[in-house]
Image 1 (cartoon, rainbow, N blue to C red):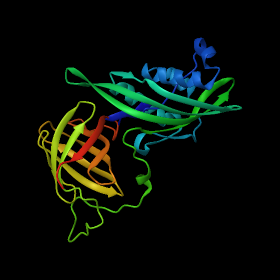
Image 2: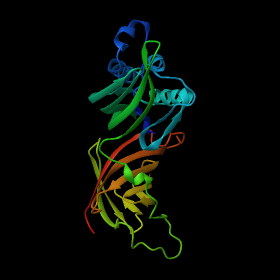
Image 3: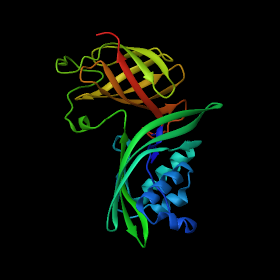
Image 4: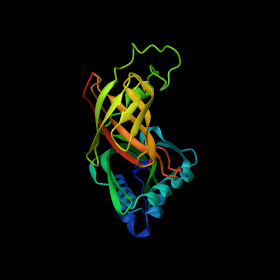
Length: 285
């Protein structure tokens, strides 16, 4: 439960937790351990998280959009980065189901990962609707999280990730066959969900064109089935980043995420760690 690449230093929204001596009694069952993990994550309590995480060197877990973590040191650094970037975290659990067999347990959970980051003198609030699954093992009488996998509830960026690419470069050389590609040309209304911010984009058949926010411009890098990926630039406030949205079956709407890769002179922003969610609606065809 940890997360945004400046769409979270998390997009780890992971659930990680621990057993301190005083909390050992509440960790006697896997559900209590999971809830303790979530609470520790929201409190930015790294020692507790470390205590509830297995530190095996070969453990693999996946964050949002396929971010991969191998072993504890790599994950710990991601957690530290997120805690440093987020001024405040709030992680309400909406649904949690746990199954147990012997010394193993597995869970399915839905939660919101709410992070607050400084944007000048104010705190910017971003809500990431998440779902997560994971496996725990009881070791020396205490439950520890082995591995987890998280994804967005609303964007539903699932199946298309495994499909072969069918489209195409943002600057096609020579003649490019676009007959098999979704018709993404025309005018789009774009909503940044968390801030209720709306603007319009006018795109060509390759998905490139300006939008009405700080002199912005979208560049499409690839469309795989209905998964649309690209970058954005805003010269007006000197920022840029990436986006990934999933087109509806009829190609008139899209939902997904956006993130920062640069803010002014700050270029060491982990991809997908900070940003928000998009809803696109096509106004013309």
